[in-house]
Image (cartoon, rainbow, N blue to C red):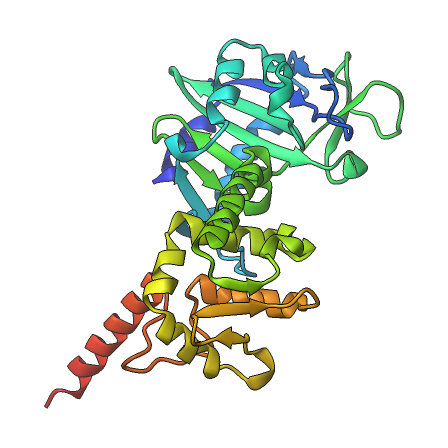
Length: 331
């Protein structure tokens, strides 16, 4: 469905606007305002029109999955979709593009953009798709067409006033479907400030863990490791899905899950008081297993009748496999 919709924008009738948005500087004390709206000519337009069919060709047969908070795997045959109303900061972009005023995106210091990006909007018959692409200034001209900023003439040597146009897309907003299709999950999360949102939820999880008093020793936030992407997402998921109360309610099963781990990976637990033990010299690996237990993740595929600390998705898969086995085993 999303690709059949995108095909409508591969037309000579489509109008195209191109904007560059520069990120906040490293000191976070001012916004760089070097944003451009290019007047497109016959040299650039064919290149930009070619992005849509290239996008369709590259991704059409990939599996489309709902966006989740989970860490991205090495899966290369998968893209993601998310409803537009679930995406923080999207409306800021849409408002600026509709008013042809991209600078309003960076006019508020609180926005703290932390990526440079190219925004390309395609419009036909009052419908619109908008492509978002982040880029690293260190690789500004790598794999991109290069044009002089004012004359829009392709050149092959570096001069002043250069600007580049990416020939790839990180994600695309499809207005008629009210969806965003995600091709590069990490970049999508950066563009739409998901990392800040995950960190906020991770901090809420840390507060809740302290309030519930389920860790004995030092606090989790004493470890720099939890600031990395993977533990941050785990903590955010723990908060979003209310896992702490589930851990408390099923603590005996958590103990069993821990005991079935290889000995070198087990967490120390005060069984009498039902608390995890965390020492100040604990390794990153130790903290990782502790977070996995708090997130009720399956360990080593250990599943017994009295141990059900597995994800809802995994439980659904097991139920289906069981039913399938019963079907084939019927006489």
